[in-house]
Image (cartoon, rainbow, N blue to C red):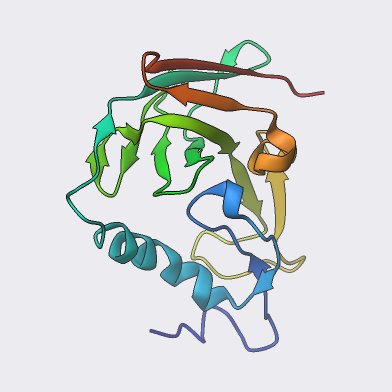
Length: 167
């Protein structure tokens, strides 16, 4: 579906945000791709096999001592494999799911977190006069495995706490 009335052809881009921030390549993409991303995520996530051995994983995210609600959390296995993800609740708590099932695969994971707000959209979804900008609520360095500094060794430990700093 292409929404041309709400997004005129003169407006060509917004921020691309893949399912897990560790896979991010922040670049401009057509607005319609952004709208279709959740559908693609649901389709891809449903195509995984049942042979995965998952370990329940839960945790808590804070920023400067305060819980972070609605943040994306991703556990990417260091040795490869399916990425687990979750969204924090109002208290900053999360439970990881991998391939639409609870848990993450055992082993060491890179952990990335993201929460941003898109500014410049009108209430009807059309673009405002000044275009779209992104306000990072969780600092952008936490969105990439190379800069987040966060890891988790899933196995004996299944509960993780990530205390982020906004420096």
